[in-house]
Amino acid sequence: MSIQNTSVNSQKVALITGAGTGIGRQVALTFLAAGYSVVLAGRRLEPLQSVVAESGSNRALAVSTDVSKPESVDALFAAIGAKFGRIDVLFNNAGVGSSPLFEDLTFEQWKNVVDINLTGSFLCAQGAFRMMKNQLPQGGRIINNGSISAHAPRPDSAPYTSTKHAITGLTKSISLDGRKYNIACGQVDIGNALTELSARMTKGVPQANGEIAIEPMMDASEVADAVLHMAALPLTTNIQFMTIMATKMPFVGRG
Image (cartoon, rainbow, N blue to C red; front, side, top):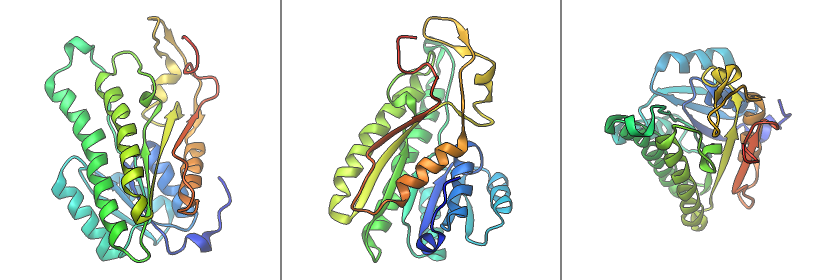
């Protein structure tokens, strides 16, 4: 884990969505270790509380949140305002996938992915944007999880890939609209971080040529350190897009 000056971060508040498992969990633990106060959001409260207990921190707040529901996101930001009075960083990480063949996708499966990955990111970004605009000192940073799928699809991933391409447009729009309020927005595109959800890739996943192949993975802590680096920059500096990936994963090339 990167060494950070915890005193610098002691008054900063970060919101991590999808914080109960996977990359979100690792980012939440890393931010807490770096001295941030951290709000952990996710649909299930128990995993969030487990992360808080694991951290041993008294600077964490777990809030059960369905990011696809405006009223749930409103309640989340009301809780942040009541507890901390401000927000400095949002890591928009909550997301789901869907793997049926394109021709077998149901409307409900499509809508579920769009509602969580895209609409959820919009709602959380809007809530953070409003708070950052109105707080003193004004401003903050929004970091969207775009994924390697923001650049290139995997087989049978139309809903997920579509939303991740859309996240890139959302990132650019927030980056532009936030300038006048000292709000920076960037995107981290992650490839093959080893989590409980991605462990299946170590046993082989479909490739573009129809083969099944085991893919190299990287430790999720490397992703968390990268997100922390983006967050710790002064608001006069922004990493607009960062791609962090397992070095030998089949992304660059014809595959």
